[in-house]
Structures are given as structure tokens and as C-alpha cells.
Image (cartoon, rainbow, N blue to C red; front, side, top):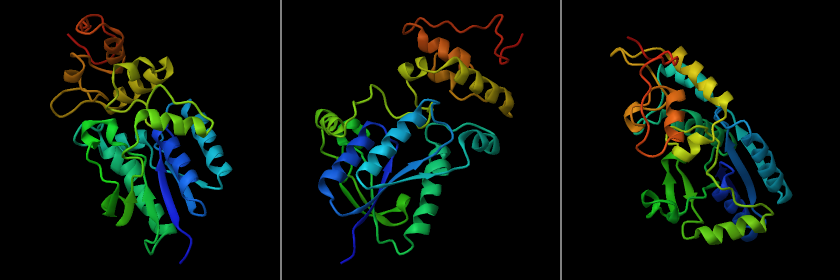
Length: 255
């Protein structure tokens, strides 16, 4: 029997570090790749986290891999719009398809096992996540293993500390901001990032219905139109945000 090969798909957030530690502790002798998808949309400071996690992986004799992608900005421009809930083409185009192409190049006979750090405690949507999936469509028909499904947050954090790291107070920032970002996430955006998004929104123009193309939907953010207003919403008290419709310099408001 040959050497076991595991492709651990990671964002290098908390669950990913716990996954790496788990594989180190339980899969001695396996050939492990830690695979990170470069979306081109990570927070500027996230690269330091990626490098630290890759250093950890190498210390365990794992092989870190970064899979390039088209990048979020070119993708949005090509699609002439931003991804939405229920239409998250960003995940498919920036992570799933590049990963499938990479897997087919290194494992054409589908002999390896893919692994992810999903935990059932994360959310109700993942409460029934299986530990094993025999043929994962998103991984080219390879088996998918989720060894942490029953791991609690407390147990996960202990694993992270055994790896020599401290748990982060936030989720992975491989995509920042994500279209599913919450108030706390948006409050952390730098001024430079906000202006980058504002420039992209202006470049994207208007829909056929005469509405501006914005990264975040106004109806989900109390009517805030454009990233500058969305960030102002995020910094307001709940229910206290008042959309600025006069003197707005966002480029989306008119008389």
C-alpha cells in the first residue's frame, strides 16, 4: 500500500490551523499538502498570516501550496457585477474551479483524500456536515474528509495553541470584505480598502434598471448605497443609521 496523500484545503483561519495540527498529530507518515486559494481579495495584512501558517506546515514536513486565480477585481469586471447571496460565483471561480484544475494536475488518478476544517458547531447550516463524503463534486470526485466535525471551539483553540499560535478573534480574511461580512468585519476595513472598493464600484457603473452596482446590497444595510455609506452604517448604532441623500459625494446620489 502506498503513502497516504492528503490535500488539506485551508484559508489559514482558526479552523484551518486546527486542521493542520490534527493532521500532524494523527496522520504520521502521510504526504500532506496544505492548499490555500489566492482570491486576490485578501486583507493586506493577511499575507503575513499565510506565511506564518505555511511556516508551521513546513515544520511538520507538510507541503504548502498556493493556487492562483483570476482575482476578485478582474472577475467582477468580467462578470459586470458583484456576487450576491445565492449567486456566489466568486467561490466557484476563485476557489473551486482553480482547485479542481490543480488537483487534476497533481492527482489525475484521484488517489488522494481531500480534507477541510469544517466543524458542526460553527453554524446551523453545518450542523449535519458529514465527516466523510465518498465522492465530493467540488473536489473532482475525490473523497472529502472533515475530521473536526465534532470538535468544539474550546477543543479547537487548544489545538491551535499546541501549534504555537493564538486563536484569532475573527474569521479568515482570505476575502476581505466578503459579501457576507457583518458589522464587525466592516468596521475593521482600512480607509485604503474602502477607497479601493469605492473606485471599483464607480468603475462598475449602473445596471439596466438604472441602479448603481455596489458590493453590498442597500436593502441589507438599511438603505446604505456604496461602500462609504455601508461603512458609515456599520459604525452606527443599530437602527440609528440615516442614509445620506443630500450632499453625498459617493457618486451614487443625484437630484
